Length: 324
Image 1 (cartoon, rainbow, N blue to C red):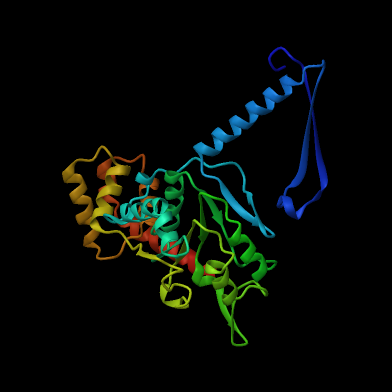
Image 2: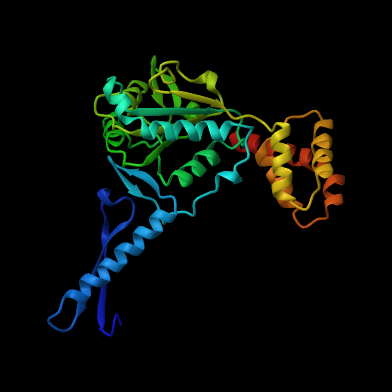
């Protein structure tokens, strides 16, 4: 029933998968009502459209390639707060300011004949918040997040160029772990797992003639020294930022976030106790430590700080086993 009208809904799902529709089957909804007034159908469709738009505006839409076009991946995700990503002082603010300046500087680029595109490289050890920061920035800016994997065996240079030329407006393009994608076979740099994508094809897609205007690209890497200099030269990457292990500022802020009942002295004690071990702390491991002990008393947390190092050793051992 809709506004006192009986609506019959028929849902048909095709048994065939269409490459133009991603990996999901094509579906058709047929709405039928009785009478001569079709306005009720227009109203229910408009209400559905507005509802869908409200969900998209309140969440972060993930998009993935399907052949040479972009498609939504699942439902929009609740936007992650920038305050939940605790990095060193000024890191988040500087990147956000640069993106906002880029948004308002379109005419400046056009007047000077500069391609209206912006590239960012975040580098540093795994688990330090590179991807989390990008996700939070997308949520704060109300941008889509287009996740591009070059390891797809079906991806080709031509498809890559087409995808980069059709990036939806207000979207970030994310290339994660870009260093892990490259290999050298027969003297030709290619993408691991793919027999059709080359480094030259990627470079052409990033700043070729057909590359879309207004595009914001993020690349992440754990090993910046492994990247080809042509990939990260000015014009392709305009802003480079190291995201490292926890500074004292991050330790303090993470302590307050996860244990807000702590006093100023508790915060200082926590930082001091962590630094006694003289070991670098990865934010992901510290978050896991707080998660494990979230129901414990604060004194218990202080007494078991050494558990953090055991957790790190266990995780590193697991990662080593998985990598081999």
